[in-house]
Amino acid sequence: MHKTLTDNFIKPDDSSKQKICLCRSIVLMNTVSAIFGMNSLSSKHVDGMCYFQVSKIRLCWSGFIAIALIFKVYYFSEYEIFTNTLDLPVLLNAITDTVCDSLLMLGLFFNIWKAKQWMKVMNDISKISKYGVLCRSALLTVRNLTWAFTGFIFSMLIFNSAILAYLHFSETYENELQISFIMRKILQNGVLYYYVVVFATIALQMGLLTCFEKISQHALNYTEIYPMHKISESNNQQDIFIFFTYNVCNSKHVSNPELQKLPNAEIIEHFRILHEEISEIMYELNNCFNPSLLSNVVIEIIMLVVNWYSVIIKIVYDFHFFGANTIFLLNILFAVSHTIGLFVFLRNAQKLSNMVHGYNSFLMEYSTRVSTPAEHLQLRVFIEKIKQHKPITASGIFTVDLGIAGPIFANILTYVLVALQFKIPQASEVE
Image (cartoon, rainbow, N blue to C red; front, side, top):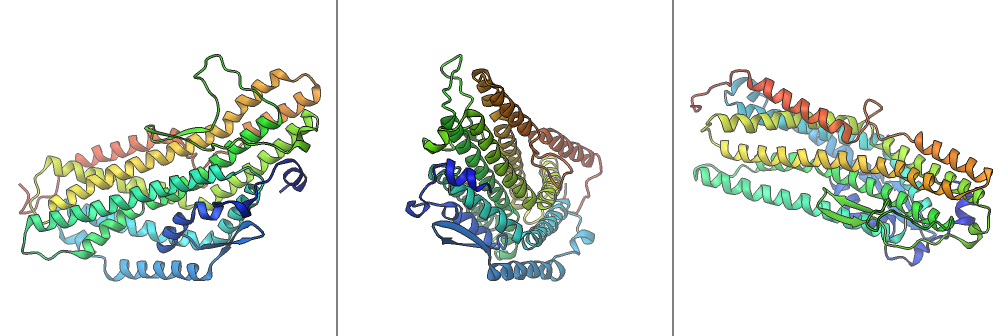
C-alpha cells in the first residue's frame, strides 16, 4: 500500500474509538461459516486495527467436518436407491443429496486450501479501511445486510423443519419421525449460506468503492450537476432484489486539507493509485473464491435441473409412496430458493462491476471542467485504467454477472424439457 497516499492525504478514522470495525461487521458471518467449517480465520485488534490470522483450531475443525462428510458419503449413503428404486422422485432426491454432499466437501477443501490467501486479503482490507475508504457507516451496512441474510436463511431452515415434521405425521401415524431425512434436507438448504458469504464480500467491496467516490469528489471540489432533480449517478444507493433500497454509506467524507493544497493533477494521480489498490483487493477476493465459485455455479445448475424436473413430474404424475408429498414440497422450496439465490448472486456481481465502471461517468464529466494538459493526461490514464479493470470470473472460464443468467436458466429449462421426453419409471404405487 502506498504510504505517501494513505498516511498523508486521506483523513483516517480513529478505529479505536469506533463501536464497529471490520471484524465486528462480519462477526456473525465468520461465526456461522466457521461452525460449518467454511471459515478458518480468527481476528483480534492490534494498534486499533483488525488483524486476521489463520486459526489452527478452526482449520482442524474444517478438516474434521470434511472427514466426517467423506465417512458419511461412503458408509451411510443409500446407494442401493440408484439401482433398486422405481420411484423417480426418490431417485432424484438421492441424487440431490449426493451432489450436495460433494459440494460441501469441495467447499471445505477449498477453505483449507485458500486460508492464507483469505488472511492476506482481509488484512489488506483492514489496512485500507483505517484511512476512511471503508468508513463506519459502510461497515454498519455490511453488518446489517449480513444479519438480514443470515436471519432469512435460518428462518427458512426452521420453516422447512416444521413443514417436514407436519407432513411426516400427517401422512401416517405408524412411521417414526426420520431425523436423518430432515437433517439431509436442512443440509441441502444450508449450502445457501455460501451466498451470504459472497454477498458480505460484495458489500465490503461496494463500501470501498462508495467511500472512495465520496472522498475523491470532496478532494476535487466536485459539485453534482444533473439535468433533472431526481437523476443521480451516485453509486451510494443500492437495492436488495429490487424491492428494498438502502444507502451503502451515509457519512460525509472529508479529505485531508493537505491533499487539497496539491495541484489537481497530483490529486487525480493519488486517487488513481488508491483505486488501483482497491482493484488489487477485488482481484485477490476473486482469487480467494476460485475455484469454489466455478464448482458452486456448476453444481448449483445440476441441482436445479434435478429439482425442477422432480417438481414437474410430481405435478404431471400422481405418486402415492410414503413421503411423496414431503419430497414434492421440499423440491419446490429448494428449487425456488436456490433459483432466487443464484439470480441475486449474479445480480450483485453485476452491480459491483457497474460500480467500478460507473466511476468513469464521474471522470468523464469532471474532464469537462479541467483546463490544464497535466489534468487531462491524469484523467485519461485513470479512465483507461478503469476500462481495463478485470471482471469477476469463475476461474477465468466465464464472467460472473447477469450476462450468464439467461444461458444458465435456458440450459436448465432445456435439460428439464429433454428429460421429460423419456418414459417416467412406473412403480406399483404410480398410477
